[in-house]
Each structure stands twice: as C-alpha cells, then as structure tokens.
Image 1 (tube, helix red, strand yellow):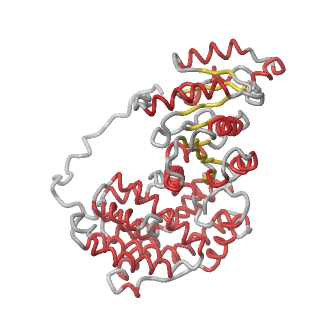
Image 2 (cartoon, one colour):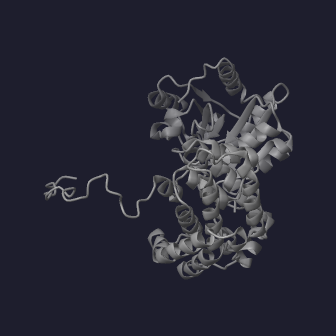
Image 3 (cartoon, chains in turn cyan, red):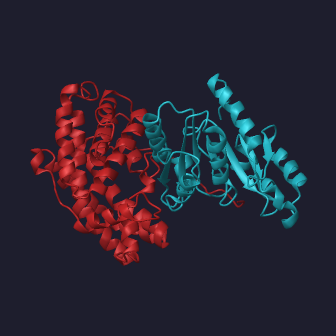
Length: 203
Length: 261
C-alpha cells in the first residue's frame, strides 16, 4: 500500500500508527522514499514500531515522485527483497517522499494508495485538487484540530473533496491523538479482505 | 494559438526510398529505449559519482562538468562499453534469442562477471553496479521476455554487473554489440550531467550541450570498445578512474544523500 502526500502532512505518523495497530497480528514491512535517504526510516526505527530490518530506505535522486510513479525499479527491488527475506508478508507500506499534489503511486508498485493532506495550509487543498486528491483510493485530511487556528472550514474541505473524488472515500483525522488512525485502520482492513478475495479494485 | 496555419509544401515523403530498402545505420528501438533516461530501471536515482564530486568541490560549474564528463567517458565509459559489447556478443552467441539462455553459456557469463568485478576496485561501486544490473534485467525481462534474460535473472539473483546486463538486454531486444557499447558510453556521459543539473542548478541546455559536443567522442569510445570485445576477454578495456572509486566509497558511507550512487 502506498502512503503519499505533501511534506509534513502526517505520512510517517500514519505509517507508524498502522504498524503499531497491526504488527501483533500481521507480518509487515516498510519502504520509505525520502529526500535525504533515511530521515523517515530512522524515525520509524527509533519509534520502535517494527523490527529495524523490516524498514528499508530507497534513494530517489532528487525526484521522489519519479521513484514511486515513472520509474519504480528501486522500490520494486526493495519490496521484493523484503518479501524474500521475511516471507510471508501480509502488508508492505511504501511511504513516498514528501512531494507535491501531483505525486501518486504507480499501480505497478502498489495495490492501493492513501493520499494524506492536512488542514494547516488552509482549506483550499481539496479544491486545488491534483491526482493525489482526486485519484487516490483514500484521501486523509489530517490535523483537524488545527482547523480553527488557521481558519480552515472542514465542511468546505469535505464538499470540495467530494466534488474532486466522487464516491471515493475521505477521512478526517487527527493522527497525533491516541487512536487517531483508527478509522484508517478500519478502511485498510477492508482493503486487505478484498485483496485476499482477489476483488480489490485496480486503477 | 490562433493565427493562420502554416502552408505546407509538397508532402515530404515523396522521393523517399521504398520501405523495404535497408536503411543505412538503422537503429533498433532497443537502443533508443535503453538510452532514454526514462527507461524504468532505476537509473534516475544514480549520479555516477556526481553527488560526491559536488560535495567535495570537484565539480562546481559547467567547465568542471565538461572536464569530469570527458574524463569518465574515456576511462570508465570505455571499460563499461567493452563489457557491454562483450555481454551482447555472448547473448547473441547461441543465435538470436533461441539458444542464448542455455545453461552451458552460464560459465561464460560467470567469467565475464569476474572480468567486470576486476575492473571495479570500489566495493561500493560493485554493489551499485550489480543492483542496477538486477533492476535492468528485471524491467527488461518484461519488455523483451525470453530465455536469455530469464536465465540470467535466475543465475544472478544479486545482479549481473550493469554493463553486462546492458549487453544482454541489447541482445534480447535485437541489438548488436556496437549498439550496447554506444548505449553504455552515452549513459556514462549522460548520468553525471543529468545529476549535475539537479544538484547545481546548471542551465539544462548548457549541460546537455556538453554531451552534444562529446558526441563524436562517445562514438569513438563505443567503436574502440566494440573492436576490443571481439578478442579474448583479457583484452577488454580496463581503464579506471581512481578518484571515482574514492568518491564512491565516501558517498556510500555518508549520512544524508539524495542519490543512490
């Protein structure tokens, strides 16, 4: 599963939360795509959410979006190496480097993808759109607790997201709070069940 | 847009030779695809030593970049082109595709792999080369599927050296040793230039002009490498660039980098 979105929106926090919520019952691994190689991987290792060796960082040569969309070779290589070493894996989370609203994952790399934005830049992000907002399988609008502080109207964001995404789901979260990732966990378990039945919708 | 459409003259195709006439210097598509930086085999994340060269202050602007690129072309570029040509020749040896993946060719591939090992004194460079080779064989094995790339992927799970993989893939795609050598030489020149554009903010047109000016040299290097690859393996070019090895080892150990090599 891909986890994408702009810098600071909460991707790494989400990956850490999902590892915490799922690692007791599933075999997990994580691949990070960072600007400076290992920043996010180091954070996840220090957070202790997963065995260190199950977290691998991929270099992206100044172009994190290229590494997850146009030329996924290094990511595929990393995922396959993890799958061989820790077989059987139930779920591999691939976190994108913080990039812009156009950066989405190739479905040659992931089966399903989440795009994480946050409210701290105001409520215009879903309206501005882009492939991440409009095409991701799940849009997460994070840091809802900051909405009153930055004058962001969550109802406006929800309405704009619905226009951009049609029936595709949107979840509003505050990942810093305990159990903030719970709604995303529910969605992810549904996707895993669909995947196991072979009925996960493709791109 | 607006404005009048340009008035077209007589169709330019009139007077072209019939399509069945052999085209002089006909270039198989595999060459164009492999030389295109967009070919999805992971090359975009590698700087060919440029990231460390920039950090060390060795390359700071277009003049340095031209000197650097010329240097790598005539040293490691020639070596890589020779290995690529030899790999392609071996890939073609059993006939086009059909018998090339036979198990009895694997000892000869192993010998070539050793020749490549011996030409890369930096352990970091050997690791990078094999990783790039593994990624190339994996991607190209889906673009040009067949027994050759399948056999090589199975026999070298950690990866053939990139130059050898380039040769094998060129063979699998219908190219010749000279084609593989040309792609290897061109890629050696283009990789650090592309990285320098991102790392230094050099005008991309000025940077590309460096490779444009090196065009004849790229062809000369490829031709020398192709000729050398027709002889015994010990005659394959073995030029090295010690500064590149040194920088690669430091790059491998540094904290915080943008490129994988």
